[in-house]
Image 1: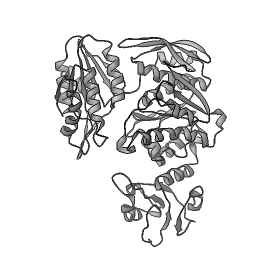
Image 2: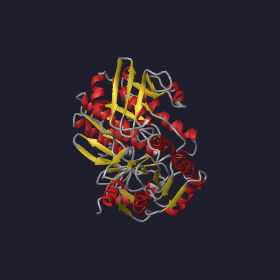
Image 3: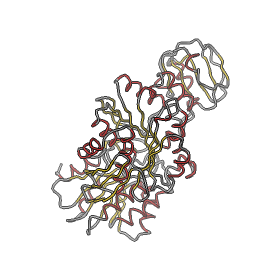
Image 4: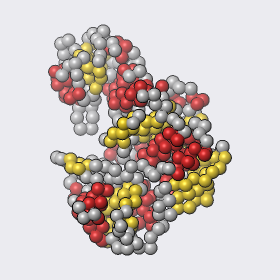
Length: 490
């Protein structure tokens, strides 16, 4: 694509050089630059792309997009913009031909529930005969290709490339998680969503957003984008959990069709006659197109909310309740979410991705309903995160557990013991017994040895993850594999 055509929709501050260049690719990482590429210089949290300009030119970059004043480079076109991250997203859409306009795109945002809802929707849409892609925290699924994901929402250039591949594969729907981080950093800028779903919100991710107000505003961007993109707004929907305290913020900023879901308050899609045990759930769902009974192969009131979100979304697409109900009867959950492990032990083991106080309160509160015996929780908070929530997390775990094993979970650049001690401060407030074992394998082994008949062991935080990230190394680690190896004597 000619550089002049590529920057058609871009607000530029200054251009120096030839715009008649033929650009064969765009990227923001100098290590992936090739001949005739445009290098986008992004100032990130750790690295500043402006410091890698010479490397990008050596690898073949013929044009640069910058935010800062830089010295001229002979034969290199330099384009200056105010926000190179946003520019990357705009260019990515242009370069790959605005692929989201050729797909039905569903975005899910909220502190918890995003992954589960995307998998629920994929199951329903496939049950209705639609070819459905999925992008999120656990996996990226394109046609029959399933790949592990390394972030909730990928960078804009990778996202647009992936969406174009989905168009090529004749995909009907794409369900994707839209994290607050991605919304704040313009990763989904230019994505033309058909449906936006709001699940819930709690005081998290302040390492990025600094305060709750900024976090809330970032989440709202998904709904504000619904109002302004190219597709016909009369066919778009906002799907909102009315039981959430801040639901009105999302309703008020919405200018497309609205459908609400909930349990406590009046909603268009609402659950009645809820029954939950340790393994399963059921309820009657009331909807504008009728009522039906839903059976779930997993537990938790919070999962009822996730199910309602998926049902509300599905009925906006004219999918019958019979297909929706049948899809749930065959659906066994998203990877690493509320997974029961059975190796002949006389106690219950649950693996779950819950990694913030809101999610931990949900799952532990649910488990508390199903045992008169002990709940033993294994947990460690990720490094390089907002550390002020660790005391709250410790307090939540201590409140609902009888014994806590504080361990490590991707400590990254932080000292695992220091993270554990911050969680410990919260556990201490509850006067519950606990131990710190920063080696996660040893921590899990200790919890299993501590468990007695009728107890529940919750191993939380990592879910389906396959690695443990330290400041100087990455090692293979999967909680389920560890449990299997311990209990089968491997």
